[in-house]
Image (cartoon, rainbow, N blue to C red):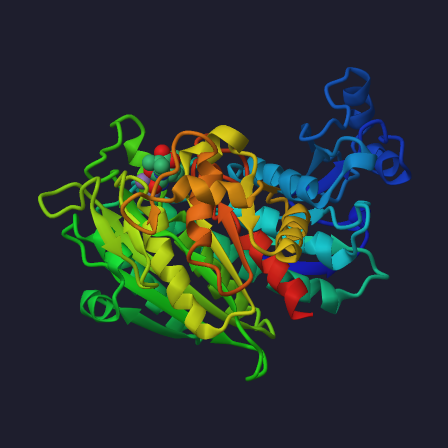
Length: 500
Ligand code: BES
Ligand code: MN
Ligand code: ZN
């Protein structure tokens, strides 16, 4: 879909559809009154009968009268002006696009960039609108029959209207940025939505290599032999139950100056998590194809960062494995020697994420990273604690955690901090090894992080548990059911701030 920026007055647009926003209780504003005359006061009648009041996410589609230039006018309710945010702007844009996508209009004009959103400038609003458009246009349909006539189709062109006084080149630049970000999110969603039979660790590795080639960053893969040679005992322990070959995926992007220490991103890449010998119940086991959501977000972020040419150095490390039960699988009670040299008692083979992350976190230390951020669909306990509204953030560096929370607020992807006090580390001490891979029923998200902390002791580190947010059980405009790509937008917001 082509998104262009256009200068002009909303009332003077000849188009098949013009989209306008209306704040709750603010439908007497001059522009609205002016346009209402063009449609024979249809809007006034609709507000009188309370069919449309401007409440958030309410919509009203009117057909232009003989005096109107626009054939149709879609009014979207914005709610109260005082609480309107970039997130609301993104959401109402997605709503409008979803509503119009089914109508075979081909193209339309969005006049939303003038809306007042507190503490924002035009480029941020254009970015939110563009993201709203592109994320609403996403579908995972590679296994569905080709769309039939009458079914929603992809739109081909959308104009974003800005006023004549505004700077068109910075608005265009914001569209380009948002296109890169949305492409990163959609790449991540595609990876998460791919079924486990297609998505082996090797497939994930090949997707990463192809993406790296496309955006011009370097990629390398460590295969089983190399992982054995270097001593990735924890990661290989998880991989040994599966017929699928494990890979450590390493990507490097160098947009900063040579001497800048990189920021490292580490993503859990379990392409399917059956639980292993500690087998999961069959209900909802299908969702465990999303257990590489952390990896997907890291790869989507790398793609967008390279496309945006961020002036920063990045390294991404993704341990990719499949967790299966078999005659060669690890057993509860097994003891693994990790890459760090620390020994791990495996009490539950379903706590496999922290095992592969232990080795990945050790490995990434070789890059002398300024900060390390890992993302993982790590614990069911996180879903219990925060539901599907926020990811958990924990770590050993308060400044980094605060930065991530702030970036999350700005991008509409929420992070909520949980404590990581020393006492929790006691819960993962083992009688037979340095650590054990479960900490009991209490504080499951925190004890998982306390386990990871043992392997992240040489640098500043934050851990994001995205178990509750990587997969949407219920779809909405801008987010169909399935993989969400959660974290791509927040990480890019954080990295752009960090690169300043
Ligand atoms: N991948 C799961 C966590 C998960 C659960 C992600 C639900 C998304 C939705 C992880 O590997 C796991 O199985 N964790 C166990 C750990 C336990 C055995 C200590 C869990 O949370 O039950
Ligand atoms: Mn598991
Ligand atoms: Zn898992």
